[in-house]
Length: 151
Length: 398
Image (cartoon, rainbow over all chains, first blue to last red; front, side, top):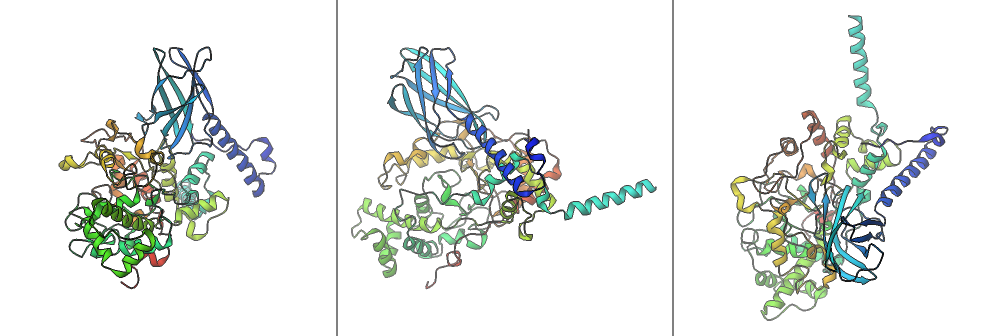
């Protein structure tokens, strides 16, 4: 659905002045950007069968489309104890479009304190993406799914 | 009668008004403005660094590469240069169905506009650097038909080339040791890549329109879009309409990724596996990022290491081409099967099934007339090459 620029009450009085219009548009764009960024910030989910708790850490910079980057996930027990020996498989895609990720990301390094480096992540269009982790640890398996909104 | 006449008069007035209203009066939503900005040439970052090419931005390499690019001596019949198929006057394409070198090749010659921004090269992405791509056609029997020894020998026996090579890379190998020869051959690819990195697109009429619109100004005459072009643009950027930006996104209007859009030619099925074969070839290539001639640590090879290898989505998938310079890059698609832009655009209306893998295209509920408007918009992406004049013609003194 298209989002119409909503100038609101503050703007109405000086709508005729281009500078103010630009200023307000800038604020509107900033807010839109902030919302977009917020959606890809640190997210914590319980795995499907609640065996683990998984946190997808906020990337250092906002994620742009078509840029190869790394992400960090932290895996703990449901009580918050760090898990060090997890085997992680990464999958995902855009459910709405019925396609997978454009790359094959992998967990390549254990960084300590339950944190794992996932390399090779890329999103090649804007919209809602899912990042799915299949986790094997301490003889248990479970899956975690994150929703990311790319602008 | 009066009513009808009055109505006709109003309709005439509206038509006149619609045709003369400056384009900036278009009421773009915030979301649409974001999309316009994302496609705008002003959003294009500098050409990305290539750690595997130490001379990528060395002006001496640009000059040397420019000479190599136009040199027909780098072919078995002394008649084929890179510029034979990548003609500057056609946005570095050749206007042919498929490339014709020593013999007829199998795929359409892609434009080189903005090529240095791509992590993958050829329609199937079988090369992972611009310099290793440049080596492919030289040794392809149907393109230049040379071998690396022959190419290095041309450089060795030309005093000017020999000096240029030595200045950049050190001495040429005297013996025919295979690894030394491959290293010298790779270096020549690096010089050609330095030249090709200069072939970036400049602002088109569309970009001038966006630049003015983002500033809230009326575009100058050279940045005006017609109502049809604007309507085409609106549909192009709308994910619930044209869906074009799902693949043709960013300032080069490509995600540089691979998609099956049902563009395969059934009669040549064995060559239509696209990216499914391309990634295997890239992984097996001695000149790839992980190979001994790239000179970079494994960490610099994320694209190759984390490339998707085993998905059915790769079958029949080809690289999304840039849409910049479209007016000059006909015919279209990887086999040049559409001679006119009109028919290429209508591919997305017809949505043919793929005979290999599965087409990603989703049905578009759009009237036929919209496709004319999309075509009109696409022609506003008439980007010139932003390189200096001398790089767009054969080098002087040859």
